[in-house]
Amino acid sequence: MRLIRRLFASPGSVGARIGVALLGVALLGAACGSDDAGRSSQEPVVDVVASTALIADWVSQVGGERVRARSLVESGADVHTWQPEPSQVIAIAEADVVLLSGGGLEAGFESLVRRNVGGSLIVLADAIDLHAFAPGLGEAHEDDARDPHFWLDPERAIVAIERVRDVLIGLDPAGADGYRARAAAYLGEVRAVDAEVGALLAALPPERRVLVTFHDAYGYFARRYGLTILGFVVEGPEVEPSAADIAALVEGMKGAGAGVIFREPQFSARVVQRVADDAGAEVRPIYSQLSGEVDSYLGLLRANAASISE
Ligand SMILES: [Zn+2]
Image 1 (cartoon, rainbow, N blue to C red):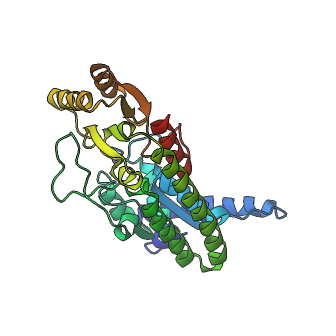
Image 2 (cartoon, helix red, strand yellow):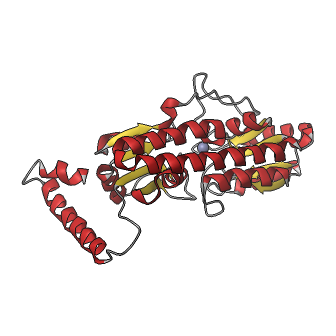
């Protein structure tokens, strides 16, 4: 509703005409809702736009039916290189709150979000202790660069999920009890999966406790579960690896006896396959975001542990 109020404040503008169109849609929605009065489910009262499908999953877990949660970057797309559709700019303006992961993850579209946001803007990483990238075989990141992929450490994800809960309570105090109850139940599940992943990976022999991945996203996961990042093909998905980078990675893998390189579904498998062929290694999946292969945060943690310990 925020967009409609805002646009109506400037009558006669293009915005006001869009506002009239949107009001029509809103009234249509209200009429449809009143048709089935006996329904137990309710219309959402909070409209949330999250940058990634993974954050939208957290919002849905905590928000339940009181919240409409959408993501800008759809499952299976790469957040680092993504650009919005015009309709998504409208969603950004219309939402009660836009949630960004932060730490530079949305560098390609964060300024567009800031220019167009109509409600509040919350950057989850602002409340998280972000560490530097883990040292690996690839070239070093800039000295002051922080690793934005904090959710791959469930302890840090818990801090962000608690923030999501508090943001929803702030926007919709009438739903506070439900948000608290759903968050408590979900955080219990996160802790249980964290323990399950920890037990699975702790059982691996030392030579299996190394990771070679496509992009440098698994520092938090590695630290949480006592793994070593041996290397990655590129620092960030926007970077094309050079022949020398690939040769160095292959040599490093051979030297360490690393038998596996992990691919991610949102990136081209071509370079990963070439490294695997040259190093005589096997390719397995690993996930930093939701995709057609993993559709929830807990599913992602479990799938990573299963793939590494397979
Ligand atoms: Zn990433």
